[in-house]
Image (cartoon, rainbow over all chains, first blue to last red):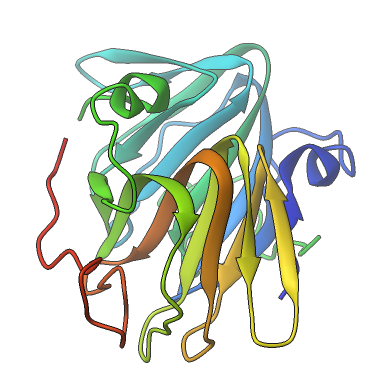
Length: 119
Length: 119
């Protein structure tokens, strides 16, 4: 039962679109990830996802709108809703989602991370 | 599907030990709460709880140790573990926990909040 310092954990990796697990509770994972550039359009059929901006900003694109997120803000993307994160500059994000969640959802490809590192 | 700005939501209430619901996903609630002073010793038999410090600092006391938490840090308290948050000065905290979680766990009393406001 140790505390987690987000800045310290974020200093341990530099790559983009590769979430790290930093906590687990009630069948959910807490993850940290850095975004830069455009991700792939995807959805999660069975998982809602929370995106909390730790540092920086990014846009969450939906088919009918875009939500701009800055530091200290979060967005919950409900299951089944197609979305695509786009970050003009690097952004650090905390995710809260079920342990079963695959980063690219139903769009498997080069960016898919089948197994995640715990840091 | 709207974003949540933590500072904006925190400006909407001033009282202590009275969590507000600001999000729901996968059977979990995201809550914001302000602590000041000493809470009651309690545990949750069926829920793990995450405490993330948005602003300020506080101590989480356990029977055998104390964990000091500052801004940008979180702690997961596993189910069944007795704990007591103590804040010398006011601190703003984000909670992730199952929707079934009662703030005072197995120690019902004056500080118990049976129903929470969504803001």
